Image (cartoon, helix red, strand yellow):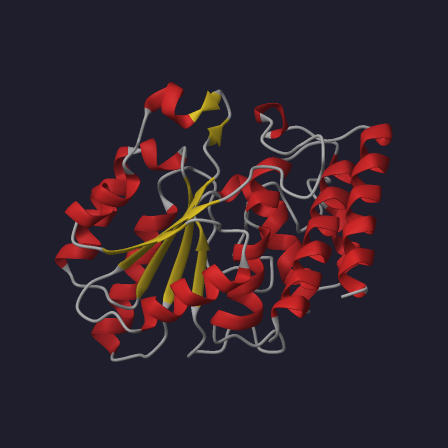
Length: 279
């Protein structure tokens, strides 16, 4: 798929994120928006998946380890055709299947329930090891937050992945440099992230702009060439990207826009979409 089409899909994903969080009056827009290109590239370009057969045996698996950014995953799944876009407006509503964190039992396309930070990567390691033991060809992808990697369980899982040489595992870190309490370097500094994964026997790829499809394409292509070790792709991104007042603002980690803010956000994204259509 051409980059322009991917950019259009990513903008639609952002629109879905804002609509969902506004409707819920709760949720996590900042980290969902920063990862929009990552979600889009995975589901429209990288992964072997079929929305018409969400449980097909040979599908690639995805685990959203930073499960609070479920609006980003849900919007991507809707954009890809797993369920109707209008269902996004049911986010976090009582009795609706799109709850605040991914639920593998009720949401088409969700391979693992997640939400407790640090646990998703462990599940992804288990899936990757299972493929190795069974001789299956599917690959496993998991997306972590840069604040999330302050969790000790992340590094237990990384040690395991390196030791078991899980070259069918790709760990992606959304490095937007902000967590709920502020910059990650001030809250509990995990830098240098790349050298840590390298020490756990990962092949490490640094992406200077994780919101750029050329750079993402090159990174995921490189990951496919790696044998005998897992891959970590560290993507520098912009928290809240695409919505003017949310960009690089820690306050938008976990709150919903009011009606006036919603209108501004939708106008921002409408203009971005129109600009893409003129290219």
